[in-house]
Structure formats: structure tokens, C-alpha cells
Image (cartoon, rainbow, N blue to C red; front, side):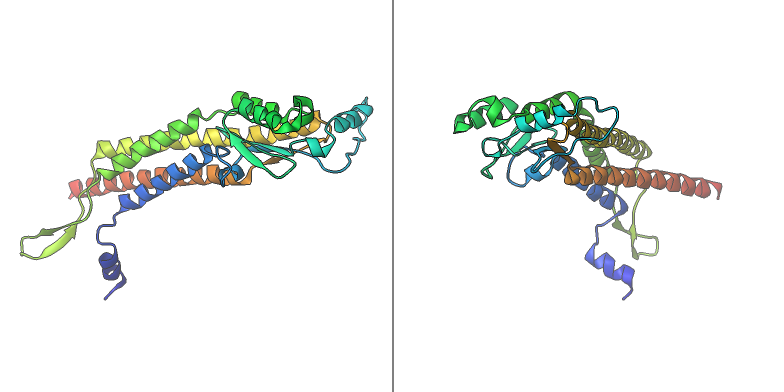
Length: 277
């Protein structure tokens, strides 16, 4: 028994569009997980765009002729002390914030005011001592004024509709030919539906690409500016998991778009060759 026959027995109903539907499902999952980052402390806290953390140890004054007031760096660093009354880190996602306290406790919420109130209610004192450099407020402004998740939602919706359109494609089925023998055939999908699926996947790819590129640039820039404006008292990190999820979704959308384009062009070529005969 050949390889094709073995695969046909294992996957009797698997067709080209089924693979694309699976890729579309993966895209929706990736983007949904990316959007849900920092909404809960159970695993989702590791999916963040940027993290701001109070630096441990001393800081060094920049040796730059443009740095006119070197004393300000030490003053800002002294404000961020002592460690025993300070939250350690704040992470920002598309829809939530997560903080880590000095005692190791971790909390996540989509409401920055709720996080700040919780820190004060647990006996950390006023805003100044609980969060000396206002990392919660900085992360909140980053999430609300710099981050924009609307394009990702559009990409998710476009991919879902594309998935539904692919579900209407005809699959393999058996027919009896003129000689009375059975054979497997697969009709061509509807041209308007194929073009609609291509348009939707292209739309999702463009919006996802713009959004993830925007996410990457803004997260890096915001982290760098936070470090510079606090003279090194804060260290920032761009979320690796969020970047991987975003760029993986963009790559998968590109694969779906290219695959649909190749399919439409191939069907068009076969129809022209058939009509020519």
C-alpha cells in the first residue's frame, strides 16, 4: 500500500482548505492569548508588552557632556528606596496590569486604581512609599495612551470570518463514473467565496502586521524612555512571549494569504487550460 493510500485511510476527509482552517484556528488562539496577557496571575502574567522594575544595586552616572546635572540621578535613586516598602515590578499588557510586591505576592487586574488601592490597603502606606516612582501610573498610561488593541480585534474577526468561509469549501467525496467504478473527487470551491476568504486573510494580515510592529516599537521605546527619565533607577524589559505570539500570528496569516492566492491562481490556470481544450 502506497503512502497516499495510507494517508487517505488515516485522514479520509482531510483537504487543502482543512489545513488552512487549522492554521486560522491557531491564529485566533495566538491573538486571543496575546490580548489576554496580564489579566490573571495564573500564567497570563508572563505575557506582557513591557515590564518596569525597580533596580537593585547602585546606579552609575552617565559620563556624557550633555548630562548637566549629575546629582539628579542619585536623588531619583534615593527616592526609589527602601526596598522593604516598595513594589518590585509592574507589567503591562493590552488589557491588564500585573504587579509583584516585595514579599513575592503577585496580583493582576485590568483596573490600575484597584491595584493601587490594594497595595495601600495591605499596609504599605501612602502612594509615595508603596510605589515611589509611580510605576503603576506609568504602566497605566502606557496601556491606555500608547497601546492600541483595536487592529488586533479586527484581525481576529477577519480571521474568524475567513475560517467560516473556508468551511464552505467542498471536500473529497466518492462518485461513480461511467464505468461503474468509484473514484474520489473534489470540486473547485466557489470563486467569489475564495476571493472573499483571500480578502479577509489579507485584511487580517495587514492589520496584524501593523499592530504587532506598532507593539514592538512602542514597547521598546517606552521601556527605553522610562529608564532614561529615571536615570537608571528603573530597568525595563520587553515581553518576549508577547512578541513571539504576535509575530507567529502574523507569519501564520501570511501563510494563509499566500496559500489562498496560490490556490485561486492555480484553479484559474486549470480552468483556462480546460476551456482551451
